[in-house]
Image (cartoon, rainbow, N blue to C red):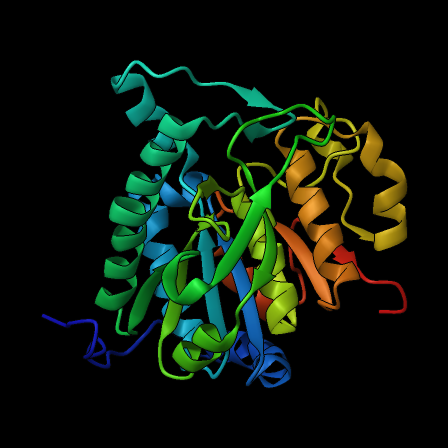
Length: 301
């Protein structure tokens, strides 16, 4: 039986299929060449983290991305699992402006779930698909230093962290040979722990690393001009266009779009919101002309 390290034996395919397979590889070639040696930050979340088939496909796709000479850095949340554990513990679950209200007990649960469970599950999946992953959180190597952040509307939402600094030394060292997988929690200068929105964390990491691209996996097709109309997908926008429209956006899409804006204004070439419910969405976005979701470009890109 083939293993992850031993490809399936060669067989004769129906006429025409080998040519289609070669055409697919040739279509991917210019994109592989363009991204070779670059750093891609991937915010992992949504259905891609909960559906067993999508989880396996994500891990395999990330392994392939590393094999072709791209350096992926994974940043993840785990909102549904945090919520499930909080409910088991009879803790209140509340969101303001798409951000989780986080008292000390909430942060303790978030840290245990994200660092102790979700992070290690992701690392294990990637390892099983032939690449070596290393789990980190904002505490490790003082990767993140944080301070308290109010909601976009100015409300106090507790120990929700704004990332003030990202120490990229540990990431650049690890990413040479491994795939960093970062849980979105951190600490401040006096040791208080913070829950950090994973979209915000991915943007901060991408900016600090000077990444070529940051990708946000989510459970919608992208940024919709009308959230009730799936046909209103905005396929591409500039940073200025996004900034002008942002005040009209609410719910969970707002932190994602704010993260896109922060990333491209911080020097990341492009930010893209990708529908993680679609099979192999990372590879479609990176290696085909079709792409998918919503692409945000910095001005002049």
